[in-house]
Amino acid sequence: MSADALNRGVEQPAAAQGAGFPRAARLLKHADFDRVYKQGRRHFSSHMTVFFLRQAEGGARIGFTVGRVLGGAVQRNRIKRRLREAVRLHRSLLKGSVDVVINPKKSVRTVEFPILLEEVSRAFAVIAGKLAEK
Figure 1 (cartoon, rainbow, N blue to C red):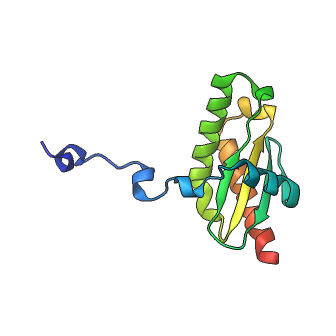
Figure 2 (figure 1 turned 135 degrees about the horizontal axis):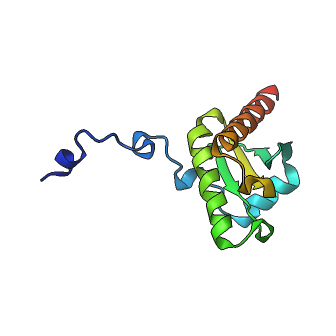
């Protein structure tokens, strides 16, 4: 049976529809994180602090810092998975070239996912507005 026949009638996941979170959209290097922390601006919300810095070229890149204070490896990985999904769903709100670092607070461990989605969406809208001002 062909792959097409297997997939027939099954809706493709959003990542297959182009709403993914590719490696090129991730902030990966320590030096990039440091630059955003030192030179960038901040947006505070109840469950996270979002740092952002306009870049000269390229698209929006997003990184996460989830420290040991938030729990063990299992809890930290769960937080990162949830944040990645929220970013994946709302990444299109970020227009232009910007580096973003999301630093969650302890309260993110127990917050419901729709609230997390709303906070990420609001933060990205604020960042887009601040970048449009300049």
